[in-house]
Each structure stands twice: as C-alpha cells, then as structure tokens.
Length: 204
Image (cartoon, rainbow, N blue to C red):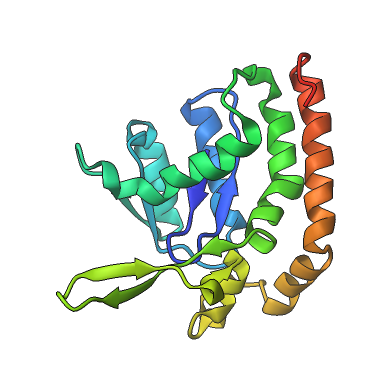
C-alpha cells in the first residue's frame, strides 16, 4: 500500500499479507499516522473497491473526508500511479514475493525507506505559467527540486498544519541525523540483505 500527499509529495509505503479488511485497516491507520501534518481528505484510487464501511468509519473518526476515483477517469490518480512506478517498483521490483514476507518488508519500509523518501530524496515540483495563448504549462525549475519535508517547510503557515506533539525541531532532527549519502548507502545495504532473505535467487 502506498499513500501520497499531493501538495508536498510526502509518501508513506506499507505492505500487507492479504488484501482484506483485517490487514488493510490497521495498516492504513498506521500509514496515515506517519504523516507529520494533519490529513483533511483521503482519495482512494481505482482499487477503491477495498475501501469499505470499516475504512470509511475509521476516516470519519479521524475527521478525514473520503473521495474516490471517478469511473473511467484514469488521470484522477496519475501522481500516485507514477510514484508506484518510479519509487515502489524501482526499489521492490516486479517479481513475485511470497505474502509471508510482508512483515519483513514492512520493517524495511518503516525503519528506513519512508524516512529516505521524505527527508532525503528530492522530488520535482511544477511551476505553472501561462503562455501567449492563455494555456497553462508546467515548468520544472532547478530551484523547485526539493524533498517532501523541505516542500512542507516552505508552505505558508506550515507550522499550523503540524499534528499535536510534532514540531519542526523534531522533524529537523530526523532530516539531519543522517546525510543523504549515508542513508543512500544504508538503504541499499538493507535492501540487499532483505532481498537475500526473501528471494533466494537474488544476487544483484
């Protein structure tokens, strides 16, 4: 499971053994709780058939509005779909992984992977400009490449969106406890060890 904030590109990944309510609901709550800021709306993609009453009730308790992708509107979730390809598939591959390894994969996600994505991996943020014909074009400027955390900090009144108990001082500690090079090396080594445990034929 992969959830993404469309403004900051904060991304939290998790893994479940089965696509059932008993597995999905606890993980979804854990993923949402990992965001350092308040969540106001949850948009389910084309897998929204799994968003049942239990999930809707949980979101209601968290005061989060639920929306779903429109039928046959493939662009509704283009951003998260692109992240699935550029991030999740790149790091975890396309091959079959036995469901029994979901807890180990989850440990990888929550121990290091999500921290790497949000505090050390720059993302492209578009600047919208209007051309002579009045059409809006998206331009990606060098100065607009930043990590999701840096993007969140740059927002006007960003502190007002922090969850209770979360401060920028605490987030800054997470961002600075490892350099980009240190966490890049650590995550590669951790993934290598993980894949050697769960994929006996893995050797790259």
